[in-house]
Image (spheres, rainbow, N blue to C red):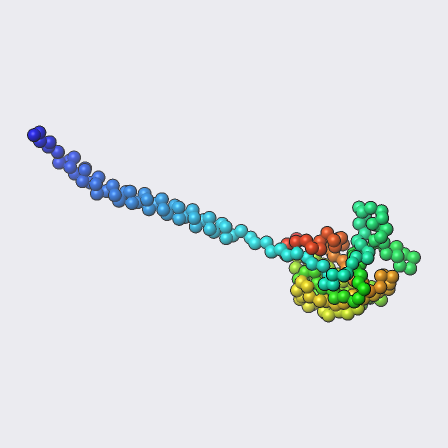
Length: 206
């Protein structure tokens, strides 16, 4: 049998390798785990920082389903017939309708289309009782020709709150019992039909 003699330095190197190698392996594995955990933590932080946009659907300014539109919004881009139908005649004066006139056989409840704050309540000889509401997204809604008003300036109201009841006025006396309704967005009157029953952001526009 041939005897193999191992020199002392070689034996020392072999022992050191067997002792040190497991620690090196554990260190690398530990570093890998920490990197994975760090990536996971960063992802979680990024996802939680995504802003949440609150939205809601604008509702009609009435509850009675028998209510119909008698006179629409004057749109200069609309067909001539629609423009003629949206003209208000008063004392030989023709006025472009800035809102929608809703009529009903009976007096009906008038409700807020969105959450907001009552910015004005007044009574005009021609327009009747009027309520103006500034909404959380900056829009303004106006309710005219009311026979009753249930709110006052400064009231904070929720969507669907009954602010009054339909009535009559001198400007649109031929309509009888009705609600004249307007929406203003960014300071300009807009066609309410382009906003009612649509989803909007509750973030105030700059």
